[in-house]
Length: 449
Ligand SMILES: Cc1cc2nc3c(=O)[nH]c(=O)nc-3n(C[C@H](O)[C@H](O)[C@H](O)COP(=O)(O)OP(=O)(O)OC[C@H]3O[C@@H](n4cnc5c(N)ncnc54)[C@H](O)[C@@H]3O)c2cc1C
Image 1 (cartoon, rainbow, N blue to C red):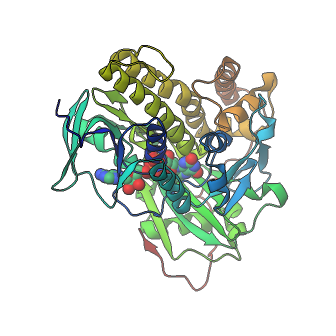
Image 2 (image 1 turned 180 degrees about the horizontal axis):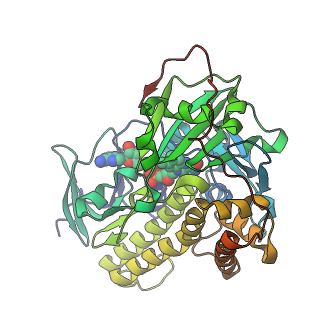
């Protein structure tokens, strides 16, 4: 091993929610940790809607007061409807099967991510920014090193939290795109979008169409994040530049279009393509992948940050255990550390078990029969309430059996709905068949980032 006094216990690539949370927990455990982040914060990031479990975790980490300083909109549920804009369904988290937190929030990511990163640094994590990890120089148990452009940083563990960059996954050649989830997302921030009244103001709106779906998320008093997720193959057939695709979609979707009638459109939109993938194994000799660097599933149910931050706390705990194993000491809980292989199996199980109900629901979401059932809003054996528990993010370290069997049952009901009318049929809505209505006679300047 190449250990010197400069060797860190852990090198973390990326200071987003997953990297910052891992660093915060490791620094609190007294470990020497460095975050290498390529962008100065605050920086723009998509993903503004949190789950109740994410809100609870922020309180558990003792960051509630810091969070309250950032403008945000309280979120108590969600609105789902077809693009035609008739008869949406609303659910609230207080309808969940178990007595769990009913509150979450929507927030602009730039100040939120900065808040988390600042908290990690104040706990003692070192930060190199702007600094980009260019190359992984060494990667073995207890001995890792990265090159940040002419300088080598050494450590005992490498924790990849580089998000969609999936630095380690690409280095190891393990990144696999989920072929049946090939989507493109187009999004931007609007002002003065019409809002739902009262406590429903923070409900993200999901408008479902045959070709994809839209989100509308109020992130502060003025601004609303609007995004359009489109099947990647269909996107290729539409003669419209990526920078205009968000508007192309809205012009064909009454549910969204009617709410932006008096809004100020963004002067800049963003595009992300092919973002659903996994990088297995999630950990190996000398490393863990955490947050989006491990895997990413369709963002329809806003699970990304909750999964990323929960897995970050798990990775911190497991890294402490592996370090204790190398040092021949006990874990903070006074246990004899397990072997690295057992620790890694624990991590794989944690990720697979907690993500499983989301994977099932995401797969169902693109089936019109499931959408009909979901909008119906009720079902036998409290399947709907179990679904709301999952959508609240109460699936860690693994979902309760009371949720698992109900989600499996829901799967079966959706299959039956293909052949029998278990819940009322709903008309499909196709953007390709829709007649567009122009948003503005004078178009704003639109650029793509
Ligand atoms: C279209 C879309 C909509 C979404 N909506 C939601 C939502 O509503 N709610 C939700 O919970 N989630 C949502 N997500 C997911 C959410 O944004 C992510 O799950 C979350 O940001 C993951 O955090 P992270 O820390 O793993 O990665 P990131 O937040 O992406 O952080 C990774 C960091 O690593 C840095 N980095 C990358 N490469 C290097 C390098 N080589 N060297 C140094 N630094 C590097 C980057 O600069 C970045 O700051 C959405 C995602 C998409 C694509």
